[in-house]
Length: 395
Image (cartoon, rainbow, N blue to C red; front, side, top):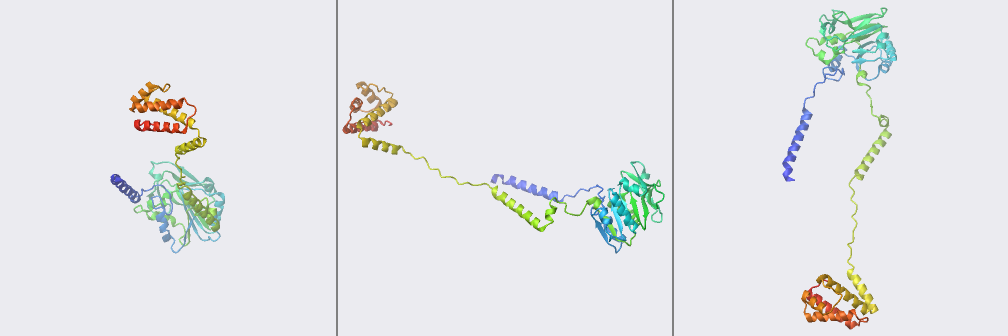
């Protein structure tokens, strides 16, 4: 383990350095046109939202995360301004009715987007024309229709250039901002005692444009068409959706009893997994070693023969077993155990000739005798044991 200590330390140090680098490295700038009021990237609307209080001094600024139908259906909203800035806006027919009713009651609505749904635009008596012309500077340079508001031109680059055309001459529609070709990009439509304003250049209200040198006042002057003495409802629903729990288990979490049951069940499952997935250590069974029962067998056989007093059988078996060992060990034929056999056995075993001949004579006597007495069996056993001890014959 010690020989790897340096490598382990090096890997640990490099890992810590990499983690610190990932934590403290600068966040890349996002150029996505989110237009979210909390987004500080170039195309967010954080600065405009934070400075909105200066345009409506002393008035409430309400951030709405509800659909237009729900928000404008609130009967308490009377004498309000409604601001919706998004990349794309889709207003349904029920929402449009609510919006018109809201404006007719003396409120003012400003909708800023690159694209609008056709039914919404048509019902307001105007037409939106979008063109893609990247070479013409006149398509991206704008000014206020009323020079008393601002005389300077300003440029807002965009991929698409949309402008409004009046299709219903019976409506009172006023141009607010137009391009160099007199095509209106921000208009005000009078409805009842209030108005609905449309603008097709949302990047005008982004952080990027507000920070442009000498142009920071332009978006605030565009918002000045909303009465300053009224509270402002800032719509974020079209960009961020509802401000509510979107979890699949929100119905469970909404109830205290169900949430307790849910988390207790999860806790119980985790406990089961922790304890049941551990490595189980089963008890090792005690295995009794095999007993050597050879001696017991010999004793049993000996007792059996002793009780039966069958000396002949014991002598014949002992003789046959001894001759088998001689045949295997000394490679001598044991069919004829005559004098020549005795001489050969004496020579190979190293035992004396006299003792060997005596042993062979006893073996021959036992082999050819049917009845063996106890004394003869004892003599046979002593002779065999003496031969085995002297010659170290393995029995």
